[in-house]
Length: 232
Image (tube, rainbow, N blue to C red; front, top):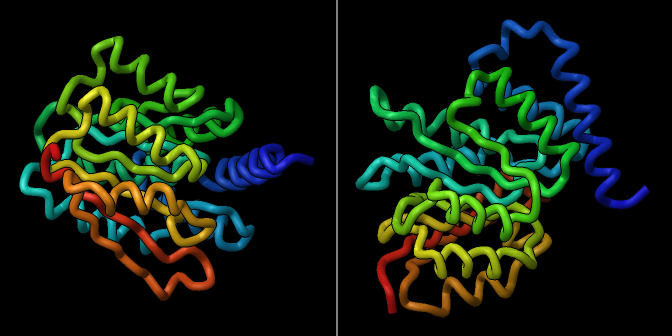
């Protein structure tokens, strides 16, 4: 079995587990579903964005001078972090037009599972799973006018680390991330994303903060948050 098949198999097992439970506890309750996914993932050694990291990132989004309304996520997997982003953006924008989370997933199996969880949590009008290669999906959303220059508040990287820099450069090329917006990256310590770290720390347009959640050891503990402060 390939790595991709193993990842999909674990996602399918999670899907079966969640939908074998009483659904009322998760219906329109994204945080309950995020907690259930986290519990299962920890017990079954699944690589998801842990609650400690979600809460640390949530605090970063809450501190933004202008409430974020649009977030791009590179790497959906089972959708636990996408659920969190949807709930956070909804809470930060009460009474306004629906915010948007666009989350990119290459695997059709994982994308379908994430969509099921998103519908269960009642976030289908906010969180949009875009299936396919992230670079192609990003350009397509721009071409369709769904993403425009300066319209993105947060980009979150949690897919294959070798694509962090190429995908960030597409965001830059299209001018999507607004000044004051955040680029957030997971797993820069384990398995590591040295090209990304060198890139965001090496140019003046970003101010980078490293958040180290040591309590998550031996799992990856680092979240990098880079604020776009302007053009060089």
